[in-house]
Image (cartoon, rainbow, N blue to C red; front, side, top):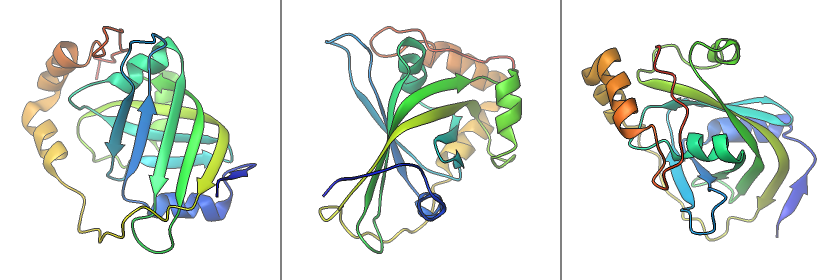
Length: 185
């Protein structure tokens, strides 16, 4: 059964921090636009307060979330328990992109590991709805390790290569929406 919570309390924040994976969902306003759902891992997510979260977004194959947030701000984050007691947590809210070089990025950057290569932006979310549900249908799985492929790829690309890649592959969503880029880093 779904349950609403007034805030992200310390127990919930600790549970979130223990999850090795979360999902990000966003969509354009256009009825024929594509809904995007992306998995995220690594040590990139932080609870900043009872209604505020953020994650360090690394360069990837697309930049759908940033494009959707620039257009309409809507976002949903989902965490699932793959070990221990079953649980699903959804955080609904409005998100913003903080680009390198901005004051907000500088303020938030210290919350995350300094050694992750390929940093593209930080996504900050003001959470308006916090909902848990049973998770009885989520399988039990054993976590082996985080992959190092993304970091190795970013290191091979290098700073200038990542800027070129973002300009070529991250500037527009699959529906043609502009995604903010912070290519001065």
